[in-house]
Every structure is written in C-alpha cells, then in structure tokens.
Image (cartoon, rainbow, N blue to C red; front, side, top):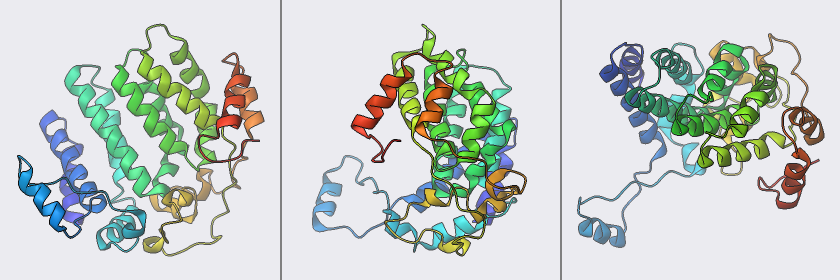
Length: 298
C-alpha cells in the first residue's frame, strides 16, 4: 500500500493535468478496494451477471461492521496516523494547486474529483478532519464557495465542509472565525446562485444549527489506532477530535495543546447566524419539528 500511495502522491504533486488525473484515479482505486465488497455470489447474482450486457455486476459497499475487521482498512487507517502517508494532506495540497489555475471546465472536473476524494478520506479516517481547524485549509473550502465558481464545485464543496465540521467543534470555531457564515449566507442571497446550490446551502444551515457535543480530552477512552472502528453501532466519526488527531501533526483538539474550545448550543448558533440571515427562527423551529438528523435540538 505504501508503494501505491507513493506513486499517487508523486502524480498529485505534478503540474501536468494528465498526471494529476492519474494520481486521483489511483487514490480512488485504493479507496474503492477498501470500501467495496467482494462477497460470494449467489445463484441469483450469477444469473444477473450473465444477463448483464457487460457480464459483470457492480460491487456492493461494505458495511461498517465489515470494515473493522478488514486488513486493508486497518492498514490504511494505521498509515493515515503519520504525516508521510496521510492522504487528506496530499489531496488538500493538490486542491490548493488546482485553485491557482483558474476556473475552466477541465480544471473544475479535477477540483470536483479531488473534493470527492477528500470527503471519502475524511469519512474513512475521521482524525484527518483536524486539518481543517487550520485557517489555511478552511480558507480553501471557503474560496471554493465564491460565486465565480461553477454550481457543481460549490455543491461538492458544501458536502466536504459538512464532513469537515462533523463532530469537530474546533473546526466549526475556525469556520466561524473566518466569516464562514457570511460566505455561506452571501452565496445563498445571490440571485445568480443555482437552485441546487441553494438547496445544499439550506441543508448545510440545518446541519450547522445542530447543537454540538463536547469532545473528550485526549487520552479519554483511547484505543489502538487500527482498532478504532469497534463495531456497527459506533461510527468512525466519533473519533474526529480524539487522541489520534496528533497523527497529522496536529495537537489533540487542534488548538495548540490547549483545552478544547467551547461548544455551542442551537440558540447560540441561531444568534450568530441571525447577524447575516433573516428568519433564522423559522429554520430552528423546522429543525425542532422534523429532527432530520435524529437528535434533540436545544
């Protein structure tokens, strides 16, 4: 796996579009091997395969309960603990390079592919989310929400932003400190913003308004890095700001070794968002009534 990562990192750091594309495909292939199942085929599956015009059926995604015992996943997770093989860091650097090339069709496709892979890596290795407590990396995502970017880039960026903030209050504080709420609401108010992007923005605001759960201090409930995913009822996202945050050269909590920054309630977030957007109360009431994320809003 180290050899494959080394080759893909070399391609991702290239200035040639074809090599960057090849590096992205190699990373995608690695993640696909980890996430897609090679389960035994039943008689029905074999019959379906024989009827398929291409003679093969699409592999199914693995369940979380399967991932925890998968040797490839365990090796990948362990490699992500160190700076040398951290995929998220390399993809973010690649994204920064692509942003410097301006906006055109081919480059936008590369940006979208890179964002998709960043989201996948952050889901597979939640400790890498701590990278976005750094202003320089959070700013990359906010730059991609600029109105000059195409709707596909904006929509994909919002998905990555949600993943980066998930179970990570320190990242949310960085997002707020960089006027992320102003960026999001300004894009929402723009007449030129597409309907699809506006729907994504509303979904993001619902997510943002959810109350935050305090993250335990480093060392509390720590487990071995390669046994972090303990079972089907424990999401890997619960490890977001745990002791493994040190693995990508970030202090636990992403705050220079200090105590974790405060979390916010829905009421506190409502007050912040109300500076930039009217009728936030309606969003909160809707959130309380529908509970789209299955949690109590307070």
